[in-house]
Amino acid sequence: MGKRRRSREGALQVLYQIEITKQDPLQAFNQWKAHFSLEEGEDEFAERIILGVVGHRQEIDHLIGTHSEHWSLDRISMIDRNILRMAIFELLYCHDIPPKVTLNEAIDLGKQYGSEESGSFINGILDKIQKEVIRKSI
Image (tube, rainbow, N blue to C red; front, side, top):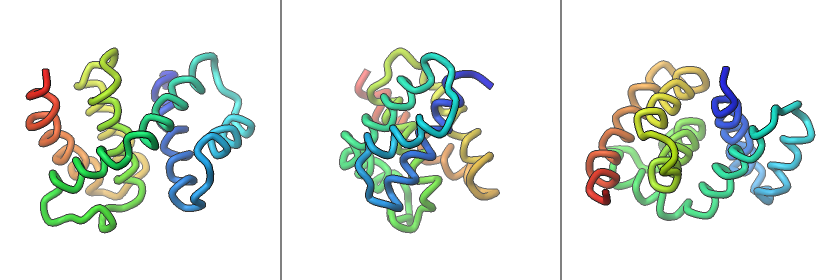
């Protein structure tokens, strides 16, 4: 498993923790770092995702809400919602990561940590956002 995959998994854990406990993002991130042995660079990428999602959450949640037909944000499982947030942050703000990689990673995380339908659900929403928002801004 690559460093960025482990970073994404860690970011997902921290974002989940933040949503449940309403804990300060940096405090939650530091707790995560203290409990896992990380390779060099894993914590920097995870921190970039966590702080990026938290800092742009309103914009990201608006995109999810407007591109998820018949699904309000609170109806989407917490795991799927945070995977979507992470992927949308990467698509919008991490120009060093190819969009195809971001989409594949998000779908894989959904399959691994979400429900049976998570992979296709995440793919559908991200595909719409990429086509309607990301590509138009390039």
